[in-house]
Figure (cartoon, rainbow, N blue to C red):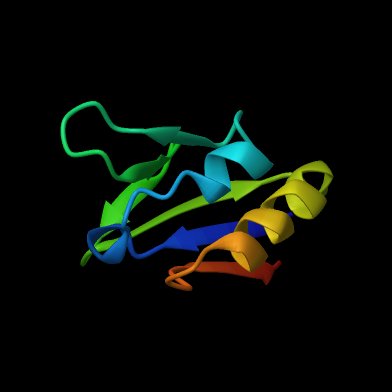
Length: 75
């Protein structure tokens, strides 16, 4: 299992995470920022726990994020 964490308020909406893992990331029509699908917000950070099969795609999202607001923690 892995935990994906996003600091959404610093997102610039570049779409890099959506291109890497479209099943886990979406662009919000309200504010143009990327949203972590099924993410739960706590103190400005969104997080979700997922299976290891999502690791590679989300590592690409983390690497491609120009503002470095994505973290991945192996559980």
